[in-house]
Image (cartoon, rainbow over all chains, first blue to last red; front, side, top):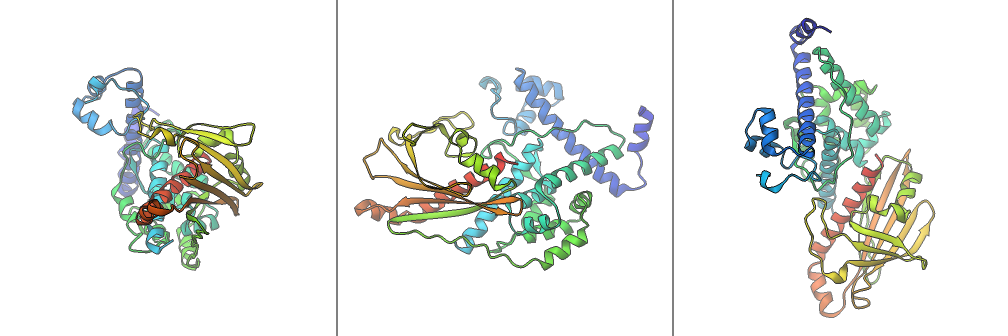
Length: 82
Length: 322
């Protein structure tokens, strides 16, 4: 599928109800992928700060969102935790 | 079990199962899918209705996955399927509820122990998500509605028979696996640590047939739990065994004065269609003298704590096999 096709399908607004539901499913997928990538980053030794920079948000924001959600077996160095 | 307790137990089983189903697929929020799956997981009246229509936990998971994949594809986005991971320890992780899922969960109102109110709320939920998942699983929503209306009110009560000298509590759980599979898990000492949430660091059967266990002092999150050292070691002697259906252990603490503490833990399996009803019973001795007086005063607390432990064990067996 070319980028034109993607844009065409994504902007198909003839059935907004179906379109909105589809966007909801996509948003949930993005959230799931973000959590998996954050976990992978921390496992690979990135700090909360590194993760925040890559996501383009503040360290506080990323820590608040993920500190309690990530796999608890991931050892994040304590000085980078808060 | 009182009606209040029964309602409390059911709603707790549901919220744990919903959280587990959300975490299994890496979701950060409990949504309608996960509440629907939880109804199937806990084996209450809704699960009877769903299974009657041919829907299992597995088929509902597949149907929900396909619905999400099709929707995302309709936006012109090609995305890889997120493979489910293991279900983490339920005491860990912070998972909130989506607003629609929370609203549907609150349909379990007052003292009603019948979780069909939640299933009915999910069918009527305005986004129409659950009917879409059901249709994907090959079941029309009207068919399920009429099954819901036709199903008799459940009366699956758990009686507690203390017996002389003993106190006891029981819970009944549901496992979407055959009694043979459940039996091979719970009766095998080598697999004990896979499901027993008492969290032993070891559980080994000696040549004398007695299982010796040691309590784990580390919690799942790595922090250390404080224990009196005399209660760390336990001995488990089988006092009853009916191959494939029943096993009961007498539990003693070798480092405590003899007779101070004694418990029994019993597992009974009963087939329910292709699945299994699991009844867990915890018995403990009534104290004598001053100890007995204190114990009587604390009885409600004790019952509550033992019931929580049994619920955790039942949920853990279900998690290990689904």
